[in-house]
Length: 182
Image (tube, rainbow, N blue to C red; front, top):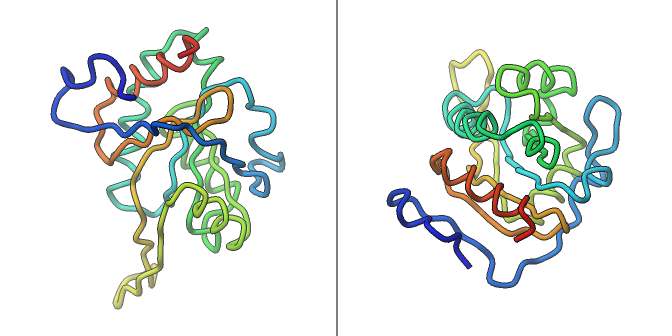
């Protein structure tokens, strides 16, 4: 069911699962040497799939997320975690991800894993990505990827999927809705 008042925030749409589904997330992905997510049960979790060399989509989505997170009080931030999952594990190391997310918000955690682990997690959410060769580029390739932001409730159920360029106000309203126990 959509959040009350979402339509007043513009033409952007937010998808909410009619039947929330429990997701087993990030059990085999690491950040700064720690296993991720088991310790985040009881918190709302923003989840985004991207990569550090993404020229435009990732910075835009993460900037919107940062704007929403910046509006949360310290108490609200303690109930919220934001995770950036790299879909380019051959390039994005734990260290490079830590440097990258540092530019956005202290609440944002960058994670990576093996290609198999990342693919497994992405599949659970329906996130898609694939490499594209770039002739004449110093990088040699880019990663085309879906650009949704996922919001998982404190009980571990995937509750919202937001399309690219969802306004920060919508992200903020949704996380506050979940953190209030809804």
